Amino acid sequence: MRYYSLNQSSPEVDFKTATLLGQAPDKGLYFPRQIPRLSDAWIHQLKSMSREAAAFDLIAPYVGDCIPRSVLQHMVAETIDFPIPLVKVHDALFSLELFHGPTLAFKDIGARFMSRCLRYFLSDTHEKVTVLVATSGDTGGAVAYGFYGVEGIEVVILYPSGRVSPLQERQLTTLGGNVRALEVEGSFDDCQALVKQAFADPDLRSRIQLSSANSINIARWLPQQFYYAFALQQWNEEQAPVVSVPSGNFGNLCAGVLAKQSGLPIQHFIAACNANDAVTQYLSTGHLPNQSVHSTLSNAMDVASPSNFVRLLEMMHHSWPEMKQQLSSYRISDTETLETLRRIYQTDGYILDPHGAVGVAAAEQYQLAHPKAPVIVLETAHPIKFSTVVEPCLHQTLEVPEAVRQLAQAAKKSIPVPAQYAAIKDQILKEN
Ligand SMILES: *Cc1c(COP(=O)(O)O)cnc(C)c1O
Image (tube, helix red, strand yellow):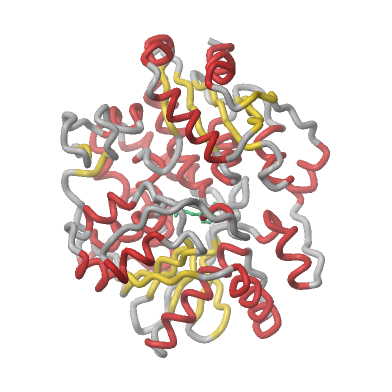
């Protein structure tokens, strides 16, 4: 498979180069030259296949001959080594629980796959790669756990001091080893700007090999198709499902659209947004607004300008009418989020996290216009990650998973830094 840059002015590359670079030299996102087609026979057999076999078949055409078949099979099996159950919440509403991985959010899947790809690509060289990432919460933990102990990789995570949840901070700061957490005296936007500055610094880039681990990297983005197939393996309704995706940077939703274009039977997508509703507005007006970030209770979706939107446009052939036909989008307020969390607990005994609650609220809006449509909501995080929102809302203490209890004992190791590039650069270069 070849990958081209959506900015159209960098050469095409293979899977390995696209993974190592993260972003094309012209700053565009990489996109596959062809979208592979799954045969009708394959779709027909999906339910009787193992999860490993289904995931392997989905990813193999994208990897091409960059990774040998047996190695790739092993990597896929390790990536999905935890349950991803589809749970019925009530009639016509299902929750795909993506939070049973080590850091309790769906980003584990992409981060685990990407780390294994990098490890393989670096195994026959003595090269070192520094994975640099800014996090507003969940990405950092998933990247820390995904890359912890991987030979040849140094991980540097920038996070805004005092603005991630206590559990998210523990996941970032307690591993140590090849994972360094820089606690930045600033906001998430500052962290993101500092990371961008590092990638644009020719001096730094001549001294170390930098890679990014957010969803612009194809090795993190493409494996997110897996769980759309796992949902269908567990699907017993007559109609094909509608899928509601709580969205921030739109990596998850774009992976679903890609899987559908390969042939997975998905009826329609719902982009569930919080107050950061650029795509909701785009669907109603045809213009992407330029707005600043709003802080919400579903903070992993607090993104003003979604980086994967360009991939969505590409898949929709840059056609606004086509996008409107394939995708609905709703903006859900914090008040509606809390109301939904409380109501679903009271009527169905099911505990959502704030991101999943946005997904359910959007699904309900869609079902007002399409009453018979069965909807799967992607439950992107474990409620315990957002216990400070969920517990007071439900007047209920959540059960703490064993892994989380152990984290509470571990010592925090972070490096406090001012939000200034010189200080950050110093830290990035320290271990090299
Ligand atoms: C990252 C994240 C999202 C948003 O996913 P995108 O792929 O960026 O749209 C939603 N929910 C949770 C819990 C997340 O961590």
